[in-house]
Amino acid sequence: NGELVPNFQLGDLELDGHRPAESYFSGAARDDFELSWEEWGERANRFLGHLMSTMWPRLIVVGVGMAKRWDKWSHALDDSMPVVPAESGNNAGIVGAATLIA
Image (tube, rainbow, N blue to C red; front, side, top):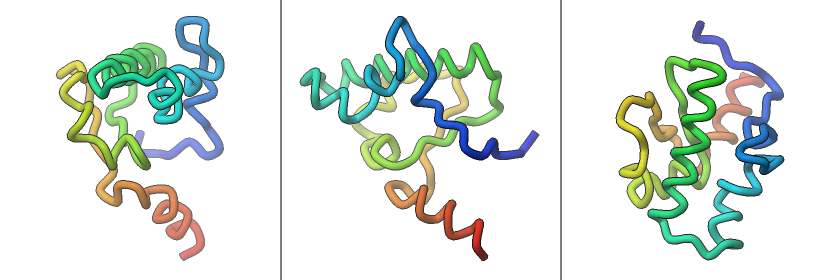
C-alpha cells in the first residue's frame, strides 16, 4: 500500500535451508562461492521469487550492489516480477536515511 516497513531485513529470511538467505544470494556470497554473474543472477531470481510468493509486493526496489551491477545479472530475472534498481544505486541507503531526518 505504498508504505515502507521499517527495520525489516529481507536477507534474514530463510531460503532453501539457508538462513540468513543473504549467506546464499548476497554479493558477498557471489564472491565466496566464486559464482559467475549468470549463476548469481539465478540465485537472486530465486530469492526475489521467494519474496514475491510470500509477500506479494507490487514493486521490489533493489539497492546497493544489486543496483550497481544491475546490467550484469538482471537478465536472469523472471519477467513477471516487478523488480527495478534504485535510482540512487549504491547510495540508496544513504538517501533513504537522509529523507528520514529532513
